[in-house]
Image 1 (cartoon, rainbow, N blue to C red):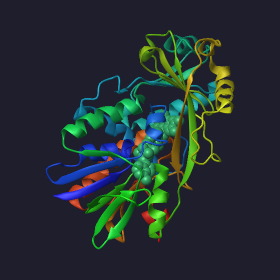
Image 2 (image 1 turned 120 degrees about the vertical axis):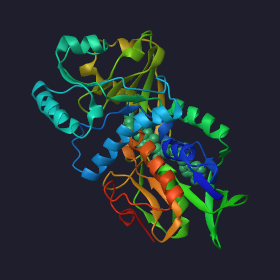
Image 3 (image 1 turned 30 degrees about the vertical axis):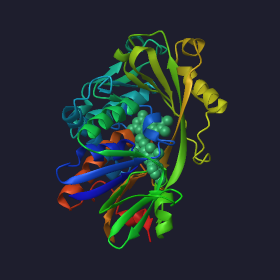
Length: 370
Ligand SMILES: Cc1cc2nc3c(=O)[nH]c(=O)nc-3n(C[C@H](O)[C@H](O)[C@H](O)COP(=O)(O)OP(=O)(O)OC[C@H]3O[C@@H](n4cnc5c(N)ncnc54)[C@H](O)[C@@H]3O)c2cc1C
């Protein structure tokens, strides 16, 4: 039996835990539950029309979105957790035609995009009544994930399969050929392991720096507004990606999210701010039919910390100089899209001891050096 410790119980760590073969691996997952991006996230799975030029990132994101079909089947995820709600993209009318052409070309390799339709101003509002009348592009394959519900469901299934969960902020140390996991203050030993998977988001730096590594990773604060509205059929509405920074994500029973901020100077601060509320209100205003969303009870503000690299691309896999140490971080704003697939690929590494995904990322030493 391989003894594996996973450090970080967000979307990568939890997916890795569930996919590891428990007949061959003894799995313990440590999570400090602080600032987690997955629980705070907005939920949009719709990478296909990104204008980012990084081809490896796009391939990873495309395969990540396609992977949801397997994920839903493997763990019987119901539509309160993940659903293909469809996505509306709001842009200037001329830009929409270009976007539709891009969608058609990308659909050749990504049939999961589904139907692509240009909607009139009236049709857009009919699809999502909170929006002003404005033309949009609809892609039917766009998805919506409830990050917190996903983690709850997988945790339940992983517990039943024998994964051990420990709520703790930890540090790590190599002792002979084993990995020692200790409390963050190093006062208490929590276990020794053959392998470590560090899936700690921006917390990766604090885990690896004491071992002499420099890591290209920085925290980014993200805040979003969570409204409890009277629109009880909201789950049937599509997600709207507004032109600019904000998105409107209708969930179940009137829960509607508006997000999110991208704050690069806030470190790992988790304080909800009025500035974020004002900013999200202002940038969404040109797209909303009325101020109805803001007229009811005040929204809750959710805060999480994303992990970013200098080129905004994730990295993942075993370290070349020590294959008993596996890392994954830097998922940025699209980690719900890429995270489950990365977790699955890491599980495959533990099963086969081979790892070769140069088509999906730059080499690890681009991001981690000793
Ligand atoms: C507001 C917001 C909106 C977002 N919206 C979207 C979206 O719509 N679509 C999309 O694709 N992505 C979105 N994202 C991005 C996505 O949520 C993240 O990229 C993804 O969840 C990162 O997953 P992760 O597993 O790498 O890290 P996390 O989910 O952050 O999990 C890391 C875990 O590691 C734990 N940890 C850290 N250090 C230690 C330690 N020393 N000991 C123990 N535990 C530790 C933390 O407590 C945390 O629980 C959003 C993010 C935010 C913040």
